[in-house]
Image 1: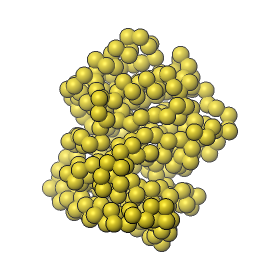
Image 2: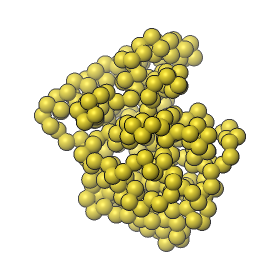
Image 3: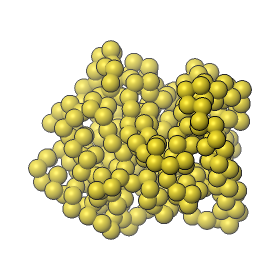
Image 4: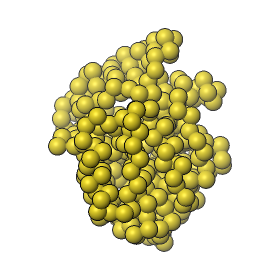
Length: 314
């Protein structure tokens, strides 16, 4: 990992927020990586919200908390969605900077401090880590989806000085004062937060240095379910803000020729992905049509069904 050349931000000036639902297979890895590999001070608060967990996630966090006073465990008996979980973190955060981490990710060493430093040097309101796909080679669905994500992220870097951009939600650093209580009915919480930061006059940027390891859906049903919820969330944001979200889908509609050039650049690296891209785009179309139907029928996606193939194995 390339080190950040800007002055490192003191870890005592930030809070870590982790939100989890039934992450017994991965929460211990996340906590180990946060507590031992990020260079955090003994004063850094690590708030872990376990939302409606029915597995052993809570006991795992309790074992860590018994040996590390930095952990502040918050238990939501009922699963109320990501917005509610983040609100619990916001209520307890007293520092200028807040690091939000999804519990189904894996962190690289030093990622937290590097992300905070990058936010400060760019005078940004929010910076999101670049996702690295762990299971990209586990079938045509994750390979095709990983290709699409790389194309759109490549386009995003070219757009970041011209337009309002967006961040990925897996690992972000945000200025706490820019966000108040989140509406719990919002599905795409990360998009709502991005728009709030833009409204406050700060840029939202994808990181050029910091990486985070994630998994993508591997089956047709998991892929369509995840994308259907995301599309529904974008439509919901449109109704709330009367504008489309700054998102991957927005890039395609706003700058199609830039996206086309990014596709060509990616295909020069891996030409064989041309054949796997089209089936994924077809599934995306099905997911979009399903989201349109859900919007008409007022389907609730706030507490969605877990996408099993995106989860880490024990």
